[in-house]
Amino acid sequence: MEILDASQTAARLPYLELADSIREVALTESSGELQAPPRLVLPLSEGGVLLVMPASDREISITKLVTVHPENPGRGLPTIQGEVVVMNATTGERLGLLDGSVVTARRTAALSMLAARELAPRQRGPLLVVGAGTQGRAHLEAFHEGLGVSEVYISSRSTESAAALAGYARDLGMEAQKVEGPEEVLDDVSLIVTATTSSEPVLPGEIPEGVFVAAVGSFEPEAAELPPALISASQVFVDTMEGAQDEAGDLIQASQAGAFRWEDATALEDSLHSSGRPEGTVVFESVGHALWDLAAARTAFPRE
Image 1 (cartoon, rainbow, N blue to C red):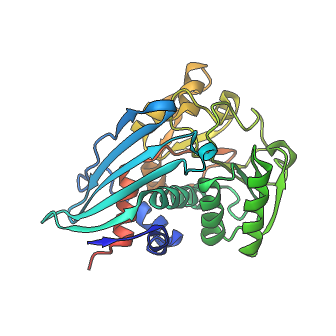
Image 2: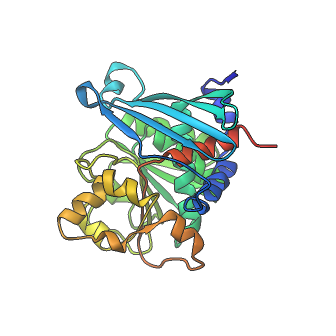
């Protein structure tokens, strides 16, 4: 069994290949060839959670174990920690162990990039990233590599983190600068990623029409990065309908406020089968699914 550390896991998961693998999995989600029961969510102390996510196709099975501890940055520890065990679905042979935090970051960013590639009215940016943590960095990389985005603005409650991520973007050859708040550049961007642990909206209720928003930070009903007014004014897409209905706080709270109806949302699988591209403002809500981890395992351990 191969035990891959963070850098080795990242090397096995290039964003473009990973996005294509996610697309392949999403297109066959309802085919009966894939299995992925609802993930187990176990509350831990101080707002932490343990997530257990199995999935399988006919050749590869995975189990992902992840802990999320929002208070960890103050302790000098990563918010997300975990591992993905990859197995031969026929024999049970353990093929490898992937770094779970890297899998989570890269498959989430690749998923958002795939959604932007399929749904964004204007794909090449400029990009605004709200949140300068692991997911902010991964999304910056994915949108740069996968969409050719060359200009980015960074907004974070930590000015030091925003400055550091902007510097990293410049190292990648991008034009980058930190901003005090999203409102400063909303008229200048066509792509927005919200990747925070905020329990309150980080964007205003009104943004310019034609912007694509990937919201990845809200995975609990009590937390919302986007206000109901923004949801109401947008075409809404979700990675999976069942996951969004259980965990997407942005949409749950908008629904409770009467600003959103679940029947108006479109699942990623359905959008990939459609030939049209949406108009107006687009919101893509991603709360994660074991199928996307399975896609990562298929990328890291390609079938012969």
